[in-house]
Image (tube, rainbow, N blue to C red):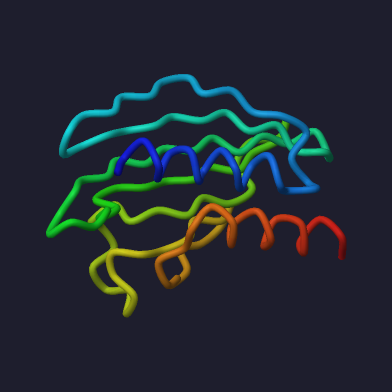
Length: 123
């Protein structure tokens, strides 16, 4: 189940027209938990660092932790994550970091993040 989930993440990367390439820096697949760390190079030269920690719960994959940190040579552009801080945000624990603020966010998947980045870059 975890293997299939991680394979799907890689399929999303392979299908994205905005992804130049990616490297799996770490992948641990257990019977009930797994983690993956990705380094994704985008067509504009920026990089998206990804991390997901998942667990099998009631026969389904539960995303326990995730973060996607988008940066370029000048540093952070945006980061999407579900770290349990910023309790005051109405979408806690889901939020977005920008260079200057913390914004509310729904839980997002890699495919949605890539589409958001592409929209931002094509403006």
